[in-house]
Each structure stands twice: as structure tokens, then as C-alpha cells.
Amino acid sequence: MTGRTVIFGGTFDPIHIAHLALAEGAADELGAERVLFVPAGTPPHKGGARLSAAKQRLRMVELAVLGNDRFAVSRVEIDREGRSYAVDTIRQIAREENGGRPLYLIGADSLADLGSWREPDAILEEAEVVVAPRPGFDPERAPGDRRGRVRVLATPRLDLSATAIREKVRRGESIRYLVPDAVRDYIERHGLYVERKERGDGAAG
Ligand code: ATP
Image (cartoon, rainbow, N blue to C red; front, side, top):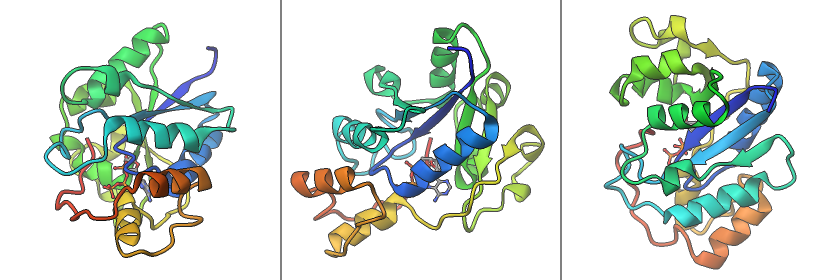
């Protein structure tokens, strides 16, 4: 691997077109060789909520990235025992890539939460954290010195969340064009999100 890798972690329950558009825009803007999507095994902040099975979330990410040569999927968090901490993922992927400093992509909402993640300073040192703007979250107003330690991308603000997708499915509304067709088929086939109370906590980890 010669170019840099963008690590993009998330619950991806389900992956949606904002994730994909941001990843594509980030790869372009950063001149990165690839984006590695890393579905969380057991997310620290969402662990108690009713989450789709890790293998289902992984499968949806695999379906979503098909056909994009710059996109790949990593199972590191799903295969690792215990909770999925970003800092462990960054270290593991950096080791596998001979010690380079990876890029780590998060949305502006995640930047606002970063202080509650495990070893936030180590994350900011060991990866170059890049932030996608998101409606309702101003990366310029990130707490402490965090704003000065990250790069804010010029990717568009896309008002879409996995929560909104799950709610639409539950209400019987169409999610066409909001997720890739293959992901929509998977959700339908497996009856995901049909009868599910929404979780209260929207944090990533
Ligand atoms: P949920 O609604 O279940 O909390 P989500 O849509 O935020 O999910 P996650 O899988 O939690 O999706 O997000 C993975 C990463 O993508 C996080 O860093 C999150 O900030 C970022 N992200 C997701 N949607 C957007 C968006 N519309 N704009 C910017 N960043 C986003």
C-alpha cells in the first residue's frame, strides 16, 4: 500500500448514502488511496441499545461498497473481543500498514463527543482526524483545543442519519435512494427495523 488509508468507523445500522458520499469526498479531498469502513462490533455508547447483529451490519457495508475500487471493509472490530474502541482500531490498522499515520474520518457530531471516547488524545496523535461537517454540529465550535488538532473537510452537509432510516422503515416509508439498492433489499429480506423502539443515545464511539 503506497497511499494513505482513511479509516471510517461506525455502527452502520444501516450504512446510508451520506456515509458513502462523505467517504468518497474525503478520499478525493485528502488524495487517499482507500477508505476502510470499519463496522463496530460492540460500540461503547450503543452497547445497551437494540442494535442489529454485527454480521448483518457488516454485510450491509460489504454490499454498499461493492463496485468502488477505493472502498474496502475491515472486520477488525467485529473480530476483536470486547467493546470496540477507535484507539485500538487505529493502532491495529497502523501496525498492519507498517506504522504510517492513518487518517480517521468522523462526522462533526462525533467530534463533539470525542472527549468521552477512550484515549482521545492518543486518537488525535496516532491518527490525523478529519471531520465531515454535519447539519446541527458546527466543527468550529468543538470543545477545548480539539478544533485545532483536526482537519475539517469541505464535504457537503447531508441531513441524513441511520436513525432516520430506521424510523422510515418502521413507519413503512420508502428508503429508496437513501441507501444503496442492495442494502434496501437486504433490509427488506431480513425484516430489519420493522418493529423497533428507537434508542435514546445517538453517540458513536
Ligand atoms: P445513528 O443515527 O444510528 O446514530 P449515524 O447515521 O450517525 O447513526 P453512524 O454509523 O453512527 O451513523 O456514523 C458513523 C460515522 O459517520 C460517525 O462518525 C458519524 O458522525 C458519521 N456520520 C453519519 N452520518 C453523517 C452525516 N449525515 N454527516 C456527517 N457525518 C455523518
